[in-house]
Image 1 (cartoon, helix red, strand yellow):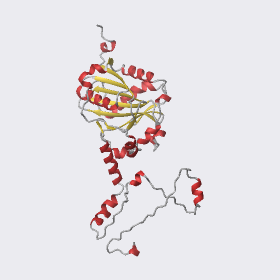
Image 2 (tube, rainbow, N blue to C red):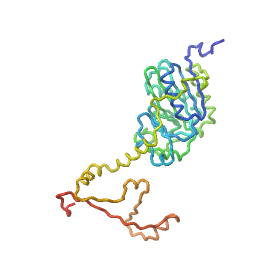
Image 3 (spheres, rainbow, N blue to C red):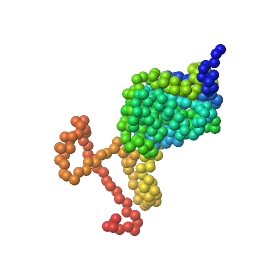
Image 4 (tube, one colour):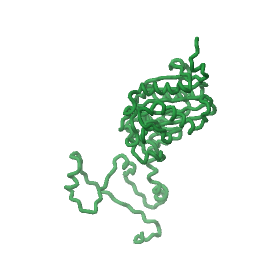
Length: 339
C-alpha cells in the first residue's frame, strides 16, 4: 500500500478524532489519558456539550471565579480540569479543538507556554485571517478586540496539550454565572463578558469551513490520519486523574466561606468578646440571609414624597413594616461621649 505523500515527506503522523455532543467531563478524561498514556500526536475536534457547564483551570477557586448562588440554584455543573488557564462556561454552541503533541513533533518549537501559544496563533491565523481581523491577543484568539477563543495548556515531560474553547455561539445569560476575573488581559479594558466576547458565527461562514480549514492547516505540519473513538479501546475509559467534577457540598462550602469572609472584623474582634461577655444576646437574625433576600435602602438629600417613590416601582411591589434595632457594644474603659 502506498504511503501518503505527507509521510513520504517525513512529516509526523497525527490522529484526528472528531466527536459530537460528548459530555465535556468525558472529553477531559480522554484528553488527560491521551496526554499521559499515549505516545502519538492527536487532534480532537468536538461539537458542543449537551448541558451548560463551567470549566475552571486546575488552580481555579469557585469562590473567586463563579457566581455561586445562581450556580447552586440552577444546578450548573462545575469542573476543575487538569490543565491551567481561565474559566469558561460551555454549551452546545461551543466548539472544542485540542492538540496533543510530542515535544519533538514540530521542529524548532520550544515546549513552553508562549512558543506553543504563538505557534497555534499562526496555525489558526492561516484559517481565520480571511474572515476578519484575527489576532492572538495575549492568551486569547480575537477578532479585532473581541475574544472568541480561550486557551489552556498542560506540559509534561515529553508531551504537551493545547486545548481551545471556540465560541461559535453562546447564550449571553450563561455569562452571568461567571464573575469578572481579578486577573484579566489588558486589552479587556474592564469590559463585561458580553462587551468583551464575540461569536464566531458572525465572522466565519460555517463550522465546516473552520474545521476543514484547521485540518488543512495542520496538514502542513503532520500527516493526518482519521481515527474513530471506538478504536481507542481502553484509552477511552474514564481516568481518575486531575480532572474533577465538583460536588454540590464543595460548592456550598465555597459559598459559605465566601459569606463568612465578608465579616472578618466581626470574627476577629467582636465574636471573641461576646464569648466571654457577662451579657448574652439571643435572636433569630441570620446575617447571611442578606445575600439571599437583600434589603435596599433609599437615601436622598431631599425629602422625597412617598407617592413619588411608589410611582417608579412595579405594580407588583408589596409593602410591609418592620422594626429593627441597632445595638452598639462599648468596649470596657471607653467613654460613650468620646466614641
